[in-house]
Length: 166
Image (cartoon, rainbow, N blue to C red; front, side, top):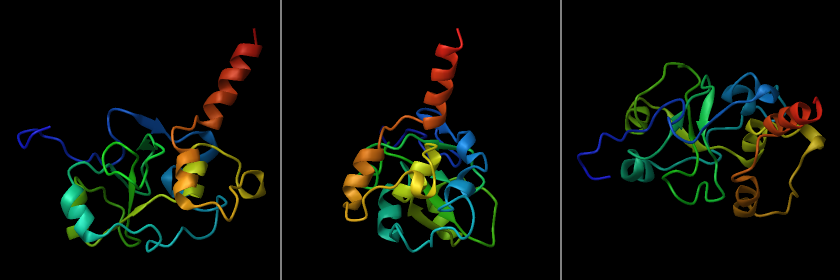
């Protein structure tokens, strides 16, 4: 992992530790970014990542866009460490093109932000609305801890169906 390494953020999900967006969020990241599968996306200011942080850690950030269908695995250390803890979302309402690096995204005027716990739950296929909610008074760090390394509800449901179909 020295300076000679060709490591770059991989827009759309890293080749290792990626998770496909499951059937519950078949609309991809854009669908998961909508609280209940419709309506407005979370504002870019919520979970915003500072320019200083991007300048320091751009090479290790996994950046996904709204039209991405894969993301890195979200871990319990999401939003605490930069490398290997989950993807960040590049949002720019007027554009849909993919960018090569986090640095390029920032220079092009994109806002980088962390996924909210609700969005991570959506990506994992947890029920939307009142079907699954974390307590309102729970600290954000605790919410990321609980959702980090979660199993996809859709994948587990399919495995159970397959096991009991025999």
